[in-house]
Length: 446
Image (cartoon, rainbow, N blue to C red; front, side):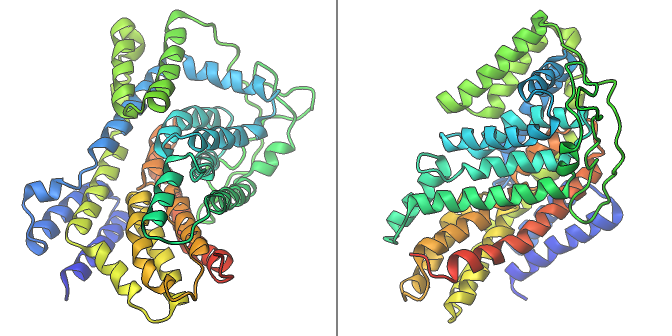
């Protein structure tokens, strides 16, 4: 048995044990990385740790730390109240506002995880307050980020278009952008319906205090925690007497709002690291108002940090020992171009659910060059299908965006929410590459 196949089988065993024995998958993955890395791949400790996602660790800790302080001093309540007023009390509009906001941020140049790190904590705080499905709100944020992610001036768009130009393939920046935009918009609409968004429309508007307004309805609970088809969704409708009234702009709230704006400006305007910036701002707030932030460190999503960092460390071992390249080259050698195309889309989706979306596209697009050169498959459609397949799966809790959503959700059963994100990510991985291949590759675009 080849080392590459052994590493894949060990990953499957990690999933099975974590699912059946309720052991933190990150801890299992660290152990697997140590065993496979040293015994199978011949790596030393430095080689195993090379895959540790230090940047993601800092982002998860920094952002959840900052927003734990924001929850403690009332800033998130202020933001939720402001959002209700912005949409005139129509709670059902908020998921679409978050979709549009993250899409706009990535379209103008924000890295997708940076946009999600900024928007997700606010969106999920709103979801918790009004009992909207956290899966619905999290998916809307992530798909919104990917909807704008391939604009001609975006980071993802610039990178992929640069790869296409370097490989001397035909390309269309607008087609790439529209393919991602429409695919994510359609998926978001499906998720909105499946997770109880329609029921939100049937309720009356809420007034500033959170009670039912003139529409005569009450604030719905939405789909409390489901929507993937693997977990039932509560359908009860309940008023929210505890919805926030107007929160006064105290000094800590004003300072936290300024810090959030500073985070946006630093990340988008000066390309500073979101995690390091968030930790710095959190430390400043903690120093000035220690009472508000005394419990914030304990509210950092440490189990999520262990989970994500462990799994990605193991994926780094797979990359180090060549497993991902081995799988891609095996597919590229298939003599049937259409079959090779759909398999590459699936490899892109599966690997991107655990690793860098842009990184896997950078590896797979060159692998597609040999059969694209035969002229049987359009290069524009193939690149668009790979881009969509490799990014819509970022709802997976093992991707950066999915991990941020999981960590940012307040007042949820994290283990259950993790399983829901994993189930939804699995559905996306199973369905989207085939649809993208059928719509974009089979017709022969480009």
